[in-house]
Every structure is written in structure tokens, then in C-alpha cells.
Image 1 (tube, chains in turn red, green):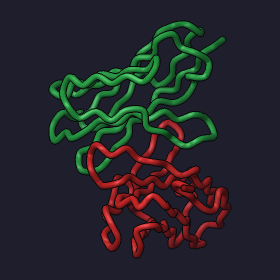
Image 2 (cartoon, helix red, strand yellow; image 1 turned 90 degrees about the vertical axis):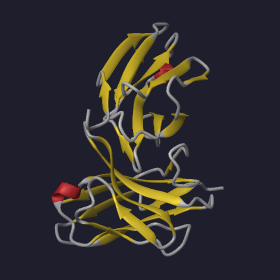
Image 3 (cartoon, chains in turn red, purple; image 1 turned 135 degrees about the horizontal axis):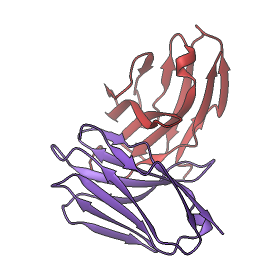
Length: 114
Length: 109
């Protein structure tokens, strides 16, 4: 199993550009989520999904869109990038959206918005 | 407590020292408390998931306790080793998994 994979590893954007961060998992996990990690802030939840076709907002959803058309994939879209979105983005998945299911994290995408 | 809070923010210890950190979380609407270990240039990995008041978990030299009534969890490392150097994150599940800011541990040989 590849686990949770993310592409790209690094990305530089200009303000106003759009892009999609890709996340995929091959563990047949129902629950997937996106976090951003900023210095001194820990991991902040952006959006999450409890299954295909179902998404919901986390702590910091503004400026990001998600969709979940398959169990395996959970892309994160930035429609108009802003410098405040410079961060490291982690995708995570767990077997179910249950409180006791541990999360498995991808390797992260480092995004810089100029 | 409205958020998940961890203390201290960072910690420097000598090899062989035992240490502990605290995670405070809202005690209302509590479902589970997660601990993750995050090494530099890697992804966070789960250490423990605890759900019941009084839970104690152990993995090698690392252990954790949970008090859901007062809203705190302790992570203990016995006889710290340089390879224990990492950021330790706790997260509270209340419908969503919300993380604290982490405690960064540096163990000097």
C-alpha cells in the first residue's frame, strides 16, 4: 500500500492564480481531511469528508474548495491564491469518521504564494 | 477551555531525563483524545487514541493518561533518547479532530 499520497511536494504560485492540491489514499478509508500547518499554530482543519459525496467545513475553510467524487481522492482547490495561504498542507485519512480512528497523514505539500 | 492547548511549547532535556507534557481540551462533548508524534521532515504518526476517563496507554518508554472530567491528558517519556526529539501533538475529537499547537522536544546526547 502506498498509504496517503500528495502531489505536488512543492508549489510556488502568484497571487490570484488557482491550483489543485491532490490527495489520494489506497486504504479504502472513508474519512479524509485537509490541514494546514503554520508556525506556532499546529495543524488547523480546513475541510473534511466522511465519505464519497459528503464534505464539510473545518476551522479555516475560507478560500478553499473540496469535493469527494471517489473514496480514494480528495482534492483541495485554491480558486484565487493569496499570500495568507502560504503554508504546508497535509492530507489525512482514517478508516471511518469515528472518534477512535487514528489518522494517517500524507507527506505534505509546501505552498508559497507570492 | 475552548480550544486544545498544549504546554510547554518547547522543551530541552538531557539524554536519560524523564519528561512530561500536558494537553488541555474542552471536557464537554468529548469523544476521544489523540496523541501524534511528528519528526522533522516527516508526517505526523499516531501514538495513542484514548476515549475513556482514566485511560492509560503505553508504547515502549512513552505513556499517556486521560482525565475527561477535568479535560487534560499527560504524555510521559521515560529515559528520553535523542531519537525521541520530535513535536508531540494532541488532538481532541468533538465531531471534528482539532489539534493543539504541539510541544517540541529536543533531547541532547
